[in-house]
Length: 145
Image (cartoon, rainbow, N blue to C red; front, side):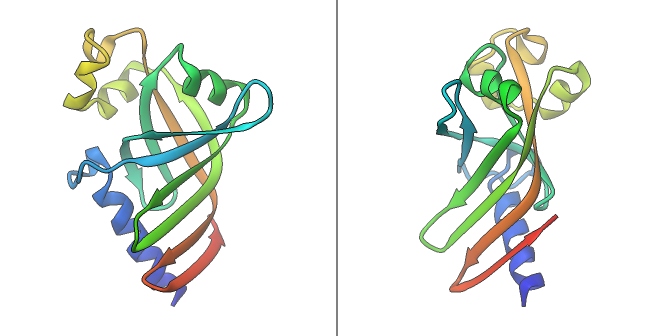
């Protein structure tokens, strides 16, 4: 049964991720630890994912998300709707590599980064899942990656 829920969660994340080609204009919630040690949450569009293993998010290099990810590499990502709740806990890193930035670039980012994929303020956050807790269609599962 757990394997079926993981497959459903993987499909839901893919449907809500831009680069997987099925973006439904959805967002996820990213939680990071702020400079005072408190959890903070913000909504963000996921760029690409590989099942529950990892996902990427694009953001501004000098702003809160990237700064907080650099200061504390622990994070949580959540996808929610009335039908499901997908909670992922893991590590996050800030990536400025031009090849990765180019791979993760999508048209919606142009509004925030007029310099395009080479804009120096554009970076990628890569979230690597360590554990998950899933509630989908009345079923639940949890595990480690």
